[in-house]
Length: 183
Image 1 (spheres, helix red, strand yellow):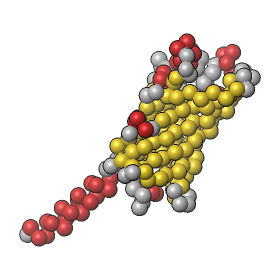
Image 2 (spheres, rainbow, N blue to C red):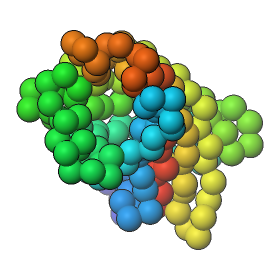
Image 3 (cartoon, rainbow, N blue to C red):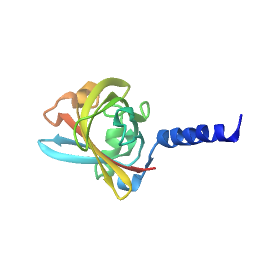
């Protein structure tokens, strides 16, 4: 084969590899939190440890893929005793289920700077289908993805035993996230 025949193939290979390269998450500018009501007072707690993998090309959003893995024991409620409590069996059971995960199954354009994401959310060994809106914007050479996923904590057995009573801790939880990533 002539070198002139190989050159276009090499360029095509490089282009395909570059297009398929996942984005690198900037963890310092990214966050995942859970917002819920405790005794009818809103509480927002941040997960201190998580990884997000995003494969996104703005020109082909329907080919995008995303996955998130959250260290359940890293939920920070602002008080050491409460942090230990939510890692226990009745809540996240972090010893048996150290990670909560989300894996996308489809990402579809939904207007300028908007996507609709669907996928599988697994918490405490229970997997459900979820779908939610996502915004995406360019910011200084990076992509910023923001969204919120409403869940019912009891669906995932978060709050067992006496904690099933939703009069103290509401069943509704909003998982909010902001992922900043670049090539």
